[in-house]
Length: 348
Image (cartoon, helix red, strand yellow):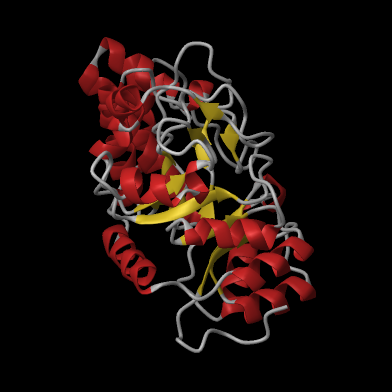
């Protein structure tokens, strides 16, 4: 187990999850010594607003940083860690794509308002990063792991609605994470369970899959998928491929210079032990390793393979935090009413 913080004074290049609704003594000691950049919450961590606030406070207290980022996957629809009855149910992103197909401006406005309301809910519990929006472009027959989490199948509309979502989150003081770079929409397998392999030619990928991420290359944070793109690197998923990260994600096809997280290391798409997975992600050029399941033995192994954040990662994180800024004033009741009007649904 790590026993000291990095001599450089920077934080370890990892985000960890916790096992339950409150920190154990073992977790508190581990997080103190490992000094991860931040933490991520899952359904198992979210019971009531007061409990989440207390957990968030204890996570930050464990590393001695009131500004340590706390992430969550709160997309809306089926991917929501904070759920009724204590929190409202938000629509899936497909709802905004469907609206935009009828009325572009209405879809964009609704996506931005929805994200602003999400930010209000998250910020109320101390969460500062939302792993959304999904910017994947699904194709017919692809695995439903993306499904209605995606806005639609039109890359330009995806980019437009994703930008509106990012703007709404940042207006509420919450950083967005565009995912899943360089695209999960063509995958015919669920990367949570196995490694998807995409056979599409590079020209098709650049015209479709990469396009929303290219349009959002100025966003602060991104998440890289565990998906093999055979036309780019047939031997490794994007998250562990230096070729994909250097030539596509950071290179001209996308040109993303924000901070890059891996998708969850504990997903079934990756092979090998947790330490070797973490080392492979960082060797490929990603900035931060994401390990989400809260399993202590795995977290210890990950921490042993993860050094302090690189200079580039520190720079990118500082730039992201500067983009977040304080929340702008908002009237939640007015926003809920307007969203309901746009979507033609009851208020959330």
